[in-house]
Image 1: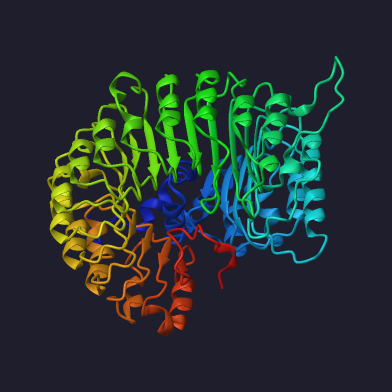
Image 2: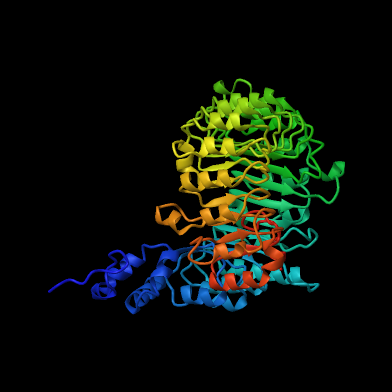
Length: 603
């Protein structure tokens, strides 16, 4: 019998799929990612039935990359009673979706961008998820009633009574109303199994651990806590003393505050607070940061010297807003903590190159260094850091005196995967040096490096550079000299790009959008672009939204078009595009990529 030729370049007929055992099809489909699984379902009835069965048996699912509606979530999870690990973007969900994701077998649940849930979400979790061990919720407070915070607090207490195996808890509420209190008496309600706790926001008074009245045979449930992270109104010595005295197993402490005004002497963190911290000899991670509007004015080098002397096991340190600390204080941590892997400092007025002198003999373990808005740092710091051979993450953003000489040293690092040079004084010559690196850099930020042109882009991203093979996240925001020529090279050579920021690149036009979303680009093996930021790109036309129609930009999940010509004329087209692509989120509010700033207040 003569064989009929296959259509579509040799694709097998549907009949062959229908002959396969369903158990085999289900096993194959269960190994696919959700996007591929849902794409296979409409092909034929056999694949549709097998895909539905595969969805009903999935034990682990990450839906944080796009925002499903209630209807879509019901189709994905409605019949699934096997789910144990779930991450979910809830920005388009409400209370009617509880039945679809609050499952009895859940062990780990992460609910992100919850903008329409009522306080009853907590009581529902406590009632239906008794096996939950890890719970995280990022919620926008939309309840306007006077007793809203009390209702939330009571619901949280009910949840804690129901989830008696809870090991880690993360509850985040918006910070726009710092006076609102959601966590009354939470210390006494924590289950005995709790090991990690993250709360935002919580007042200084609520965060202080109450006197427990413990006996010889009974200790309070929170004594097993080893990781604590709080976003407060103000960090004080009294708070630090309360935490360090009552949490003997504390290994990780992260405190961040945003006081409404400069704190007074008796309501602030001083060197005494650092002395209390120095008695936590098992501390391995310490983050202390204050909003840049105010600073820790009562902590100087002595405080950090006490910390370095007492907490020699520190592996990760983040300090922000310490306006009186100089090189001596920071250097004491670097040289005393031999296991220090992560060192981060922000808005340090007196941090200079001297703090990083002689790193070759003291900081061999450093793997992540973030020095943000430290204006006294120059390329000499980059030269010193090049001796840290294990360095994988380097952030020197808004250190405006970092120049081309620093890039020459950075290019010698062998294990660098993330590099942020936002606002640095680098030119095309510096990029030429970076183009020769053998580091597998997958994330690069050049935002605001205004002296960079197309020539530098072409040098670093042409097809023969190592960086073009690995780069997946690229931020070229606020580069006025970058045009379609640079984007053409990036589109052709950087096959793994998934996140691209072109914010305020005024000479990028529709031509670049066409190249980035081309069907041929994906057919040749390039990764799909998941997030694309075109905010303030004035060179893009009002009709450019048509370039995002299917089949272009397959897999796109977030698109920023704020302050472009696409917005005033494209509202109707935006609605059509969202209906056509339910997994896509379009931001018109000029947010940073992923809508991380005040997403809950979008129209």
